[in-house]
Amino acid sequence: MSPSRDVGTHPRSLLAYQRDPYLRKLETNVRAAGHDENGNWVELTDTILYPEGGGQPADHGWIGAAAVIDVQHVSNTIRHVIDGEPPQGRVEVAVDWDRRFDHMQQHTGQHLLTAVALDRFGFRTTAFHLGPEVSDIELDNPGIQTTTLREIEAAVAAEIRAARSVRDRWVMPEAMANLPVRTRGLPEGHSGLVRLVEIDDLDLNTCGGTHLRSTAELETIALVGTEPMRGGTRVHFVFGGRVRSRLAAHEQRGALLRDLLGAPDADLPAVAELKLEQLKQAQREGRRLREQLAELLAGGLTASMDPVATCHLDAGQVDLLRPLASRLAGGCGPAAFLLAADDGTFAVALGESCTIEVTELGQLVAKILEGKGGGRNRLFQGKADHPELLEAAAAAVRDALRN
Ligand SMILES: [Zn+2]
Image: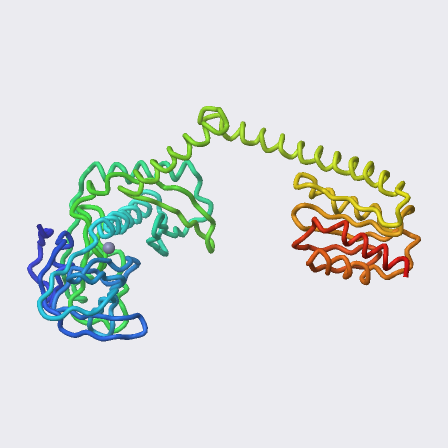
């Protein structure tokens, strides 16, 4: 069913998506096909697929068996970018209806939201963006508060319940001067009839997009956030199906969090805050204990009578390697300390008695452990494939020290 029109004039060359935005299938002919930087394209004698424009994204759909992945105005024609070989002759065109209806909800919703924001609150819309999950408008008023958002929502919801009809009609540009049209700006180079979209008794606007028949089909609105924008406020919104899918996702996350944190919805922020504070405390305590343990281990290693002392750390002690190595470098006891951890990190720390350069011994150890690293100030650190060969490396360092 196409929306009723109260004015008889309209262009002779209206396309199917303009005649009836609820048409899901159409038989038509391929007029031309080709290839450009976007891929294979097809031009049709008529189409139900909306080409990107006016803030509304392009439809997706099918021409025969070929998927349509983009639709664009090119010069005076509409190109359907397809995935696959261009079909020929008579074809059936189908629109991805879920995607289109979602766009119709968000786009028509924006008309209503903009009208209500201006008429009831005095906020003028300066920009509109239809996103894949959330859309937004920019209002020319900075610092719109949450209480105002809830009032705007309630006012829009009342207009949804009022089930106002949405119609389009075509007028000559001169006739617009006598009509209460909000946006008079026309695309550059526009000539001929102009399409007006009217929400019964509420709004009259120029627009080329696809719209619902009635505000009732918007179902519901949710304003889901704001951010400051160039002296105004960007308001994020969802209508209809997006409200339901968003709520379902929230509920799923809520259930997961209730389960994880063992608390009801209302207590989740406080419980999460408490758990994060406990985690910070545990991390501080962990650091303190590691320092203590490094101190104890360093004491044991410096007491060794061997000129080369070794220490192998298992996977749970990897974080000990650095604090331990830095304590040993330049200290008393053995001439060299070789440390390696299960994850492949290793270190060579030289005691005060060692007269060989740290990079020389470090490279020797790195070669045996099959790794790489660098060093200065009596400390060489690196990463190796075979930390388990630490004793073999120690033997080589002992030889080097003897020579
Ligand atoms: Zn529109």
